[in-house]
Length: 242
Image (cartoon, rainbow, N blue to C red; front, side, top):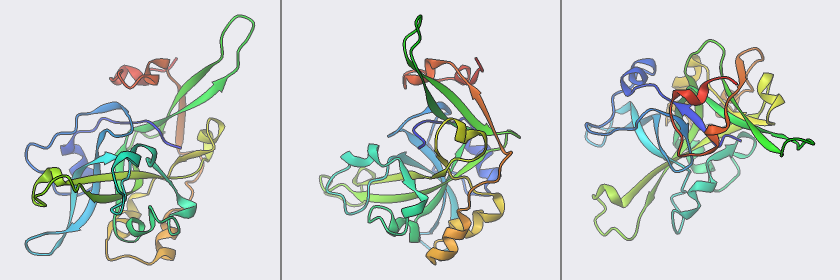
């Protein structure tokens, strides 16, 4: 799975990297080296303009943890931070978003934990690892997004009436990442961004072909300190190797 990740690039960097329009004025998602479920995150997506109807690629802030449009409440979002690639087209929580509401979630890398058994002199603990592209490029994690209408807000034009949420698509872990955890986020290559983000592209078989397991030799894995275990800790020092 992917339960924490790092995303420290500025919106200016991200709009350039993904050739997207910038976020709404005043919208801020701070850089984070310890992104946790329910946090606001940057996402790249394509949607039709409300005025002219033209499809635009844009950088938007979403809440990590998908809340399907038909949910009775938003409480389950924190549990739906990951969607398995093998069942996207079948699960009711994901299949509508898979067809029409796909996104990219930019990351520096992600964290996984490996259980270390107790010894005669030390207690058992979980060793965190940071897994990132070897070349230092942005990791464009494939994701889905949804809108949920909050019935407690009477005015549908009130921004508070809508929750915009997302989930990270995961696949079987390959390369060095597989030594730490059997699952990992599925990252897309730049050549596939256009097809993945296009809301008019709705053939499930063609979309599934884009979600291929990454080739080996692309990821770096390094052990980091246990400070990342607490969501209260944040900063580039969390990535320091130990």
